[in-house]
Length: 283
Image (tube, rainbow, N blue to C red):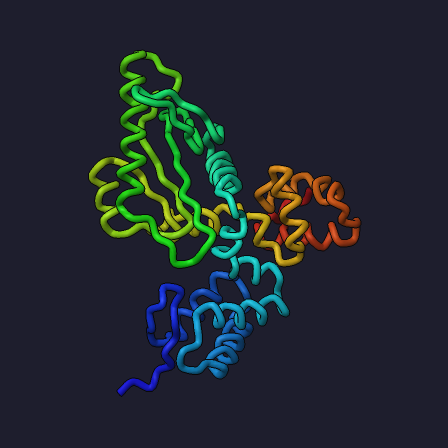
């Protein structure tokens, strides 16, 4: 008989607590190994049957924040992306920025004429070789997944636009491929259909090594909502100004001054961003 603590996931499923998974998630924060082991041990000692993964996250996050704000920012990355809401538009801007820093020329919220109807494309991404139609599926709650209906719908829109381009021969938006970015997950049949249809999917943890989480951690393009030093109101005001990246604040700190943050605190914010995003070059 198992003596493991039973914990409740966001989906409602009951599973065994695995300390190795907690340690792995803490190591992604780049915190000191001694601190990681200390936090994991303290969390484990406070567990009881039926505790939720949300409560475990909150305990670990609070301990991290008390020791390293940038580490806490890395730990809350998934939650930070959900805080870009409630609408999906900041997420679309965020994906556009990630693609822009990746070498693409991007435009957000573009109306494109299809053969049957016109379509609003979330992000148009162009590089030296190809032209991509990028759709963004944003969720502001844990546990939401994207089923096969999503790629089916996106593929039908992609084909309608392609048909119009063939009719015009030299259409402005002659897309080569459709992409779907989401901050949660895709079901297995959604992935299977997309692979068969030629759609590219990017979710929180898929594909391996090029998932949304991987792209952010490798590039250092963290959303400003990850910063634990900013208040909720300050984040909202910056998002209203069209700022979505920590790096944008570091490159142009006037935005912080414009929302009423004083110089000493701006310096602390910039220091946190520098550490979080690995920006070791001087301004």
